[in-house]
Length: 97
Image (cartoon, rainbow, N blue to C red; front, side, top):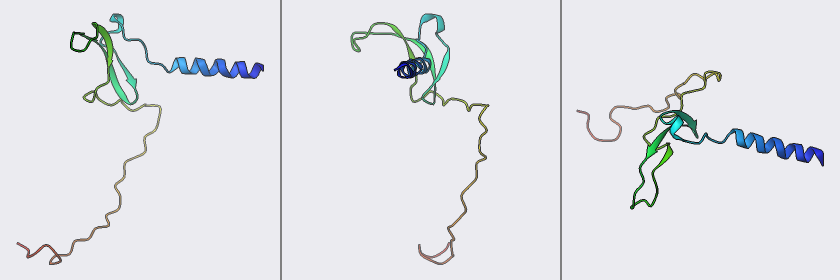
């Protein structure tokens, strides 16, 4: 029974540690890496069309850059796949020019 309570407590703490910080006026302009995107805390105006009040939100839109790679993780060198396509002149497509 005790190990079950301990397991639940550690799971709750790890889930809480992974939650993004709250975007407020104090951290406006700061960036945080969320789901592979470099999100920025910014002020967003509300309005009658959106039905939302003025607020601070994380901007993780499509135009935001990806997060930089973690320097503690070694990156594998990029390699090109072997070329398997051979083109022969005069085969298909008509006359050569």
